[in-house]
Image (tube, rainbow over the protein chains, first blue to last red):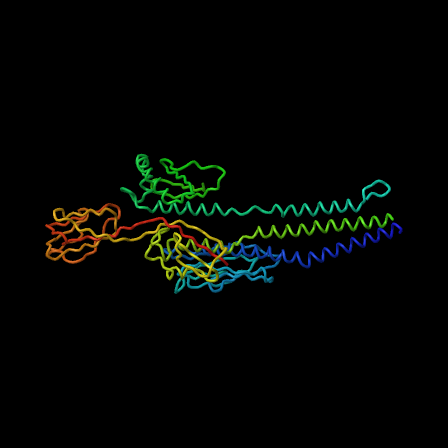
Amino acid sequence: MSPVVGKAMEATLVVLYLGAVTATLYGGVVPEYRAATGGEIADRTLADAATDIEAAIPPETEAATVRRTVEMPATIAGSAYRIHAKNDSLILEHPSPEVSTRTPLVLPERIEHLSGTWASGETAVVRIVDGPDGLEIRLE
Amino acid sequence: MTDGRGQLSLSLVEAGVGVVFVLTVVFGFAVGVPAPDTETPQLDARAEDTATVLVNEPPRHAGETRLAEVTRSRSAFERERDALEARIDRILDDNLMYRVKTPHGTVGNERPASVPAGRATVVTAGGEVTVWIWHV
Amino acid sequence: MRGQANLLALAIALIVVTTVASVGVVVADGAFTTAQRDATERATAIALADRIVGTDSPVTDRRNVLNESLLEDERIDPIVPTGADIRITVDGDVLYERGDPVGGTTIRRLAILSERQSVTIEPRLDRPVVTLPRRSPTATVRVDPDSDVETVRANDRVVLYDRTGIDGEHDVRLSRYETTTLEFDGVVDTGEVSVTYYPRRTTKALVEVTVSD
C-alpha cells in the first residue's frame, strides 16, 4: 500500500474519530453538565436573593421604608432569567427547565403582601413599604 | 512500533500528547474546589447567642445585667469571674470551648490558631465584650 | 506493511485516548456530586431559626429567650414557610413538624427557656415580713379581711394601703433590680396573709431547625 493512501486513511480515521467524539460529548454529556451547573448556580443565586430580602425586613419597632439593591449574576448557563415572587416564595424562571427553581421565603406575620419581578441584567431593588394592612415587599 | 528509521511512531507520540492534555483537565476536576466552610458560621451564631444570653441575664447582685456587672470595674470583675465562668459552662455544650474578653480581664481557654472559631462582640456600659467559641 | 502497521498504531492510539477521555467523564461526574450544596435548604433553615429566636418571634419574650408557655405549634405555624418539609425541635422535643425532612440541612441556635413558676409563702405569726428569695416582676398578696392589715410595703415603698383594712387579693408590682422584702404592718395570724410570687426558672435550650426540599 503506498504511503499516501496509508496517510490518507489515517487522516480520515482521525477526522471520523474527532467527529464521533464531538458528537457524543456535545450531544449527551456537555448539555447535561451545563444544565446541572446552571441549576446549582441558580440555587445559590436564589438562596442569596432570599437571604437579602429577609435581611431587609425592618425590625418590628421601627416604621421604616427600606430600599435595598440586590446583586445577581447577569446570566445563568448563558441565558438571562427572571426572579419573581409568588405566594411567599421566590421563583427563578429560566429557559432551561432544569435550571428553574424555587425557594420559600421566611417572613414574619407583619408582611401582608409580596409581589414583583426582577430581570437579570437590570438593577434589582427590594422595596419594603408600610401599607394599609401591614408591610409590603415589592421587587423592582 | 518503530519504523525502519528508528523513530518512535508518530501515532504513539500523538496519543501520548492527547492523553497528557486530557489528564491535565481531569486533574483539575479531580482535585475539585474545597468544601465550603459551614462550621464557622454556625460557631459565629453560637457565639452571638451566648453573648446575647449573657448580656440579657439578670445579675447576681446589683447592676443591670450580668455582663454589665462584670465589666463595671476591675474589682467587680475579679469578684464575679468565677460565677461568670460557671454560667458559661452551663450554657455551652461540653464539646465547645470559649474565651471571653472584657475590658478588665479575660476568662476561658487560650484560642488555638488552627481551629475555626466563631466570634461575637457586644457593647456594654463598661466596654466591649468579645466571645470566641470553638470545638474541642 | 508499514502503512498497515501505522494504521494499527493509530487505531490503538485512538482507543487509548478514548479510554482516558471516558475516565475523565466519570471523574467529572464524581466531582460534580461532591460540589452540590443545597443552598436553598440552608438559607431557609438559617432564616427560620433566626426568626424563631429573634425579637419579634411568636414564642420569645426577648431575643434568645423562649417563653415556655408560648411553645405551641399553632403559634409557630404562621412563620413557617410552605413548600418544604420542616422539623423544629427545642431541646430534643419536637415543637413543629411538617412532612419528614430526612437528609435535610440542620441549623442550631442556642436560647434560654424561661418558665414561670408560682410559689406561695405564708409569713409566720411573729414576723410579718416576707423576703422573696427570687426576683419576680409581680406578686399577688392575699389578705384576710379580719386580719387588720392596713399597709403593705415592698422595700419600704408602700404598695397597698387601705385605711379600712386590706382585703382580698391584690397584684403588686415589684422591683426588677433588687430583691424585695414585703412588710405587713399589724399583727398577722398564721394563714391570714399569703404572698404568691412568680419567679422565672431559666434553662438552656438548643433549638434545631431541619429543612428538606
